[in-house]
Figure 1 (tube, rainbow, N blue to C red):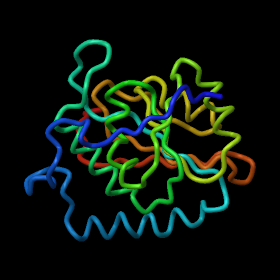
Figure 2: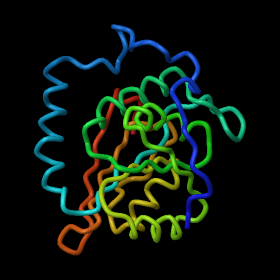
Figure 3: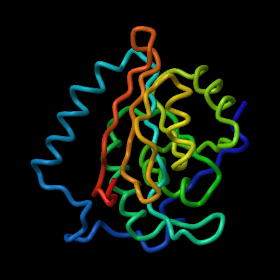
Figure 4: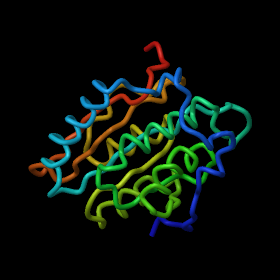
Length: 196
């Protein structure tokens, strides 16, 4: 089994995020954009309801200091945006590598859904895939720029271009049982901060 331990990660563990997003935040969306996201989820997710569906993403922006950096303010805002965007997506479990930046990226969503954050080893993706294949329903897996595309590919999906070092907005939806092949949908969430 891939889960080395289960811990509750709370937004309080992410410093400086205890209030709503500022009105000038790039993560604020107009009512029209929120409606567009809702319509996308409304039409997209029910078609995937009978299959094992995974939301796979890289952690939010980090301080790029040392081996286990924390999220920047932009990374924490992206984590809040993710929680708001996926709150009604039917996610039943949340998996994260055991680093501050990955745990903090999913902390708001996990708390909102009252789910534990389960820890996996990003150095053993085949074991993670074996564990995911035994699960049903919808899950979210947060990883890193190198492991996220590799995981999508191991699940039978199409990861597309490599994730650029400064790219933090890519979100994959991988349906692992779509007509025998994995269906991969690649989305962007929050502001796009890259220049690929």
